[in-house]
Image 1 (tube, helix red, strand yellow):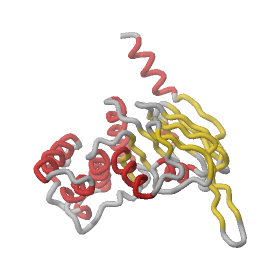
Image 2 (tube, helix red, strand yellow):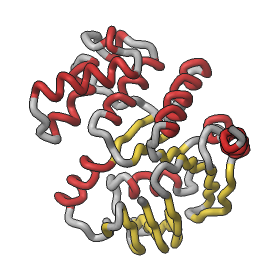
Image 3 (cartoon, rainbow, N blue to C red):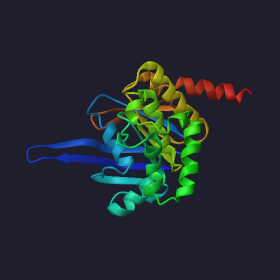
Length: 237
């Protein structure tokens, strides 16, 4: 699904050149749930932004569903992003002036989905995420956990092929954070492909694999025991 080879990102100012990513190679297959960890400045958010087509690489190759994204024109990049990628952000990024319904509906409007179909899809996803009773409310009227559920609904509304989550529990208490991680785990169980940046070892343990980054390179990749145990348990049935 995602194949990255020798990907580099250099930030330049008049005085200094910073290697944010240094020839990274990475493969994410359909149905994978992968976490990226590392200290601030390790390059994990830069990598996520490039995968999400919000930023461009300086060199290397990034294939999304077999198609090269490096050097793609902005219009085609935007189209690929809208058709294939759903984003979940730490700060929710909801529009305060819009109701929950309108926030969730927005990506469908951008994709020119007909009105009647939009209404059905919004109600379906809101019911699935247990926020149907909040559709007429506004973001400020919701708890942090409910706001993140709205953000997840918005990310999923176009049936993206990959979900990118940037510190999805970073602004939540442990109870709401747990709910969001269980939600992501359920999505993964149902076939979703997820790439998540996190500072939390606990959150990373929900994923199948954790990639550790530092100074723009991948230091290590490890399988997570929680998922290995689940796989072993499932194979015994």
